[in-house]
Amino acid sequence: MRFQQGENQSLLQSALAQSIRLPHSCCNGTCRTCMCKLDAGAIAYQIEWPGLTREEKEEGWILPCVAQAESDLVIDVPDAIDLKK
Ligand code: FES
Image (cartoon, rainbow, N blue to C red; front, side, top):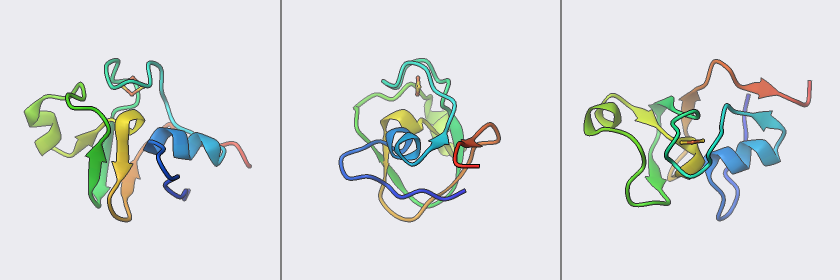
């Protein structure tokens, strides 16, 4: 599944806008429902304190509901659903 980062959108918002459903709930970086692994690329957060520990960040976990791509990314979201199919 592929999607484009939308301007001024989070990764989650971008995916949903392109009919790719990623797990989510709060959409503000606290509940961790959207937490997934970043396998490649770089992100920046839209908020100062996303709900991840330093260790989780070092292990590659991200919160796509409050993250934006800074490069092409590969994220691992086993529960993603392509609603176009
Ligand atoms: S949806 Fe709650 S932290 Fe991302």
